[in-house]
Image (cartoon, rainbow, N blue to C red; front, side):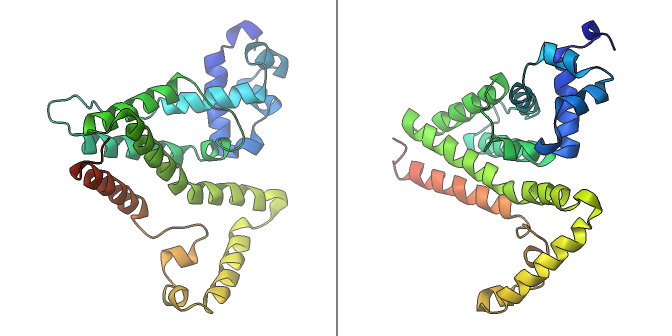
Length: 230
């Protein structure tokens, strides 16, 4: 494919597909160029480094998050906050490599900025002073990111353990079985053996995300009702 038929946008979307399939470790310019039917030098002409590519890919997937309108006639701040957090959670679940990238790459751009700006607007509308709106938005962001660590870790581990033909599923099952033997020594863990969280690696109980988000927003409401909004 001639260089001039490539665009940065096409490269970024191909990179997202590759990242979804192979994770951060599987992304390299040679594999990406092969997917595009091009030469690696042509890819470099448009996007200079892998770090730039990850940054652009990450910001592109942020645009997948549908932004609620906090000023809609039938909207209240809590409904908008819930929709925004759920949108971020769904996006990170679709693209688990982005969870990893937060700890290994400098990520910024208009996609994430539009999300952050609306989040601040929602908590200001709720009644928080600007500094406390910052804290509320950061608390929810950190909670959502943390809630996707388990699924992202499982995807990454399956890829790593499955290299060189190894049976990743069996290796994980063996690790879970050994962890269960350890858990038998602790009474509350022993009571929960056999639950989903005990038999699946890095799993959490059903509806943990929804429970945690409601608890966090309940706390915000209580602070606002008590006059602690700033």
